[in-house]
Length: 270
Image (cartoon, rainbow, N blue to C red; front, side, top):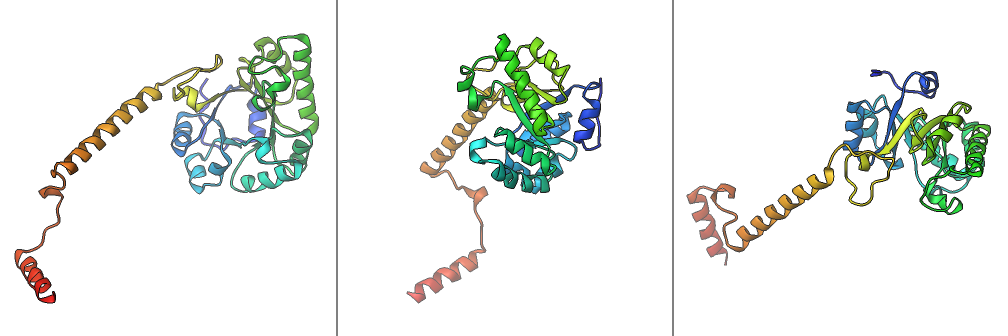
């Protein structure tokens, strides 16, 4: 279904359309990626906080619903989260990621800042769930994810990333939660499907997560460009070493009489 819009996405519009439209979401890292995502119709973006503070960003992405996010340990506790979030909202953030405490989410909500939590596989906290593997495959694990969603709701979060959770478990939760669910490996029932641009663009050289899909091969293109870069720089160095650069096309010239007079002046000056 086509859902192109020139209207700014909001929390209200996401909630209204959550059962009518599947949203696309990417984590982007550069302004070039931001411009491409907007042009491609990717509605939701996770971005580094510094990008939100760059006045060029909103000019490139006028309609995207934007979640700046950073590791909770770079921010701190509830008061620090609020101080971190306010300038981002002032610069056009639509919501913020909050991987910190429920108290942090509650304080953000009390100040009108839409907050997004994180359930399932949470990489910075995966020591609690057994490492880099799916969460929710046991009854106790599935119950815990549901409990976390309820806790996020009670704290005032409007959304949650649900990561690497069995599709059927995520679907059962989606039927019952008021949270706008961002599925990263959580199956088709999420209100948005969330991937990293590095995976979508094929920029990663290591293992690609099973839940990701690669749509381009930037890594090979980067290799090609790097080989071109080395070749061009080697040719430049060889030209310099061999006295072939600079040559006539690259030189600034002066009239012969000016040069002669200047040389005469230099000789007299000595």
